[in-house]
Image 1 (tube, rainbow, N blue to C red):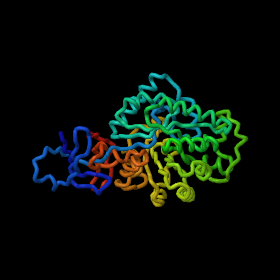
Image 2 (cartoon, rainbow, N blue to C red; image 1 turned 135 degrees about the vertical axis):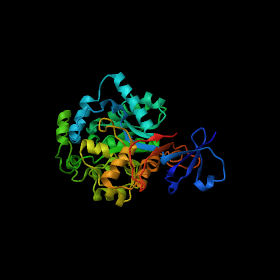
Image 3 (cartoon, rainbow, N blue to C red; image 1 turned 180 degrees about the vertical axis):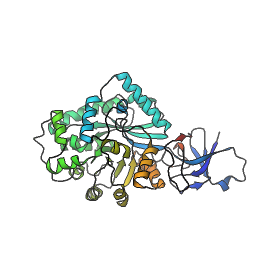
Image 4 (cartoon, rainbow, N blue to C red; image 1 turned 90 degrees about the vertical axis):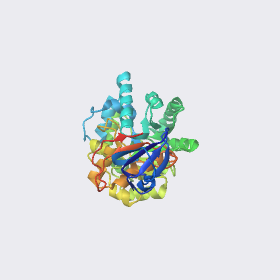
Length: 388
């Protein structure tokens, strides 16, 4: 049985918006037709008309489901170094409560119109939730270890976690430049090449990250002291963080997450080294942790592929992609249509799901969300009504 959904505007993403358009969907959620109002005038169709705009389901390319129990537990605007220390101190807890929080977060994302998630995991705890979810998950299993002598042992550990996640989709990925040795980076690259998969890495979330690589100064020295790590072996590269670690992965398809202090020189270096990079923005988490936002205008001027993420409930009050879009529209005046492409097709392309989701096109099953826009395409509310 076919269903006919119409709204003031349909945003297919792959084509220009259609005023008073109609989306025809079969019982499996597959798009059968995308019609203009004129296409339907001579037919007696049972069209359900909504006020607002119909858009494809959203793709959240960066989340930490297993940190969902930490909602409202960490103070805001502490800076990344102190935030990481809070995570280390607080991430363990009652297993039942952690699982319940993950189920609730998964349901929250579903109700907020999210159809696919790139999720960071450090353990197997989220597997059950992901297996039962209506959302498609790709799990990024993080490898962490700054001591080069530990690289092989760490890689063996994360390979065991990857094995335990089967048959779910996974990749082994580096956590961040300041927590992954060059030797471990190289092992991760080799594994990604062997599996022909893509990776994700936290990138340049704070000035302290650049300071550490450039001259071995800044707040990360306090973090290593807190962790009891001897880093006398480390010699500064006299380059920014991105320019220090990116050569280790060569041309591997990679999601750079946060990019809060990435400069024009960093972006130029990255584009020259790797033409298969995606740049993920998590604006509300950036404001929560560092009270700063990336140079979005610079990223747009450089014409890089941008995706969006929510990060975790440890660093955000909600898991809502439309809220992330609203923050960028309010703070950075990014156009709605550009934001929508970041939240849909770009994320689908990175996760290699663009043949199934990301745009409202015949043959796809993207999900349909109803949102409220002003006459000049400004997001009026972060409330999402999931239609299918």
